[in-house]
Length: 112
Image (cartoon, rainbow, N blue to C red; front, side, top):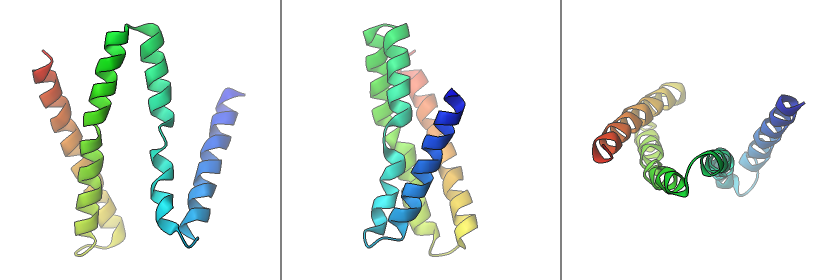
C-alpha cells in the first residue's frame, strides 16, 4: 500500500508539472520538483536515528548541495545554444555528477 501511495504522489507531481508547463506561468513548473520531499524524509530519519548535531551537519551539507544543481542549470542554459535538447540534458547531468563528486570530495577532506 505504501509504495502505491508514493507512486500516486509521484504521478500527481508529474501531472502538476505538465499542467503548469502549459500554463501562462510555465516557468513555475521548474519550482515544483524542488519541493523538499526527499529532504523532509532525510531530515526526519537522520534527526530521529542520529544526534541533532548529525542533523545539523546533514542540513549544512544540503545547503552546499545546491551547487551541483546550479551547475546543472547553468550548463544546460549554455549548452542549449550548441546542442539539441537530449544531448544538452545528458551533458548537463554529467556536469551535475562531476560537481557533486567534487563537492563530496571537498566535504570529506574538510570534515575528516
